[in-house]
Image 1 (cartoon, helix red, strand yellow):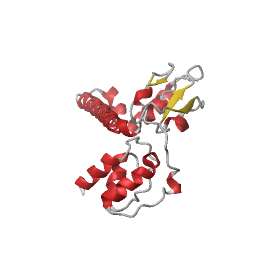
Image 2 (cartoon, rainbow, N blue to C red):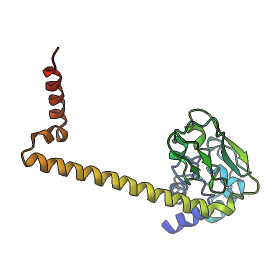
Image 3 (tube, rainbow, N blue to C red):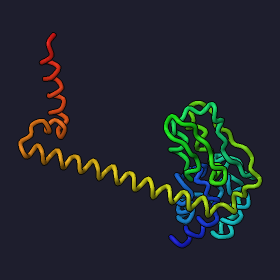
Image 4 (cartoon, rainbow, N blue to C red):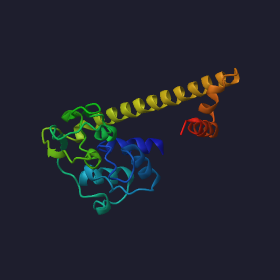
Length: 209
């Protein structure tokens, strides 16, 4: 099953757009391999993608499922109206290929060559400053391996950050616990939310009226 999922995944455009109803291309490939998803749920793959998946899986060719959208026959990239951008980073947080540069309260811009055209940034933008423009010079099928690589790199980066946060939190808990065990009562509220609430209430009651 994994080998079939690999072969299916290799035929997908790797836009990671979620139009198929799955969080990324690989989960969709696995669902197709398992027979729990149709071969007609990938608009970026278009009719050619359906035909390729039909040949690989032995399923009949069907029209694109309208619930997933219409076939996409052109390459698009996101463009940010930079003077309107407020630097909220919401688009950066959802970009599956890390194709958006910027920082909090700083202007953002799109790296066109890395943009998969997924459109996930558009609903994320609170000021509606992102538009999709045709980019015929950027072939989407040819860039599929690049999109997959960028997506996998991003997933690894996010996993590392999550692990660092978890480790830092655990270290702080252990440090506070050690201090409390050593007889430092000031650390107890930080460990116990009930104790923290009681300490706050006592501090408030102790304030002169």
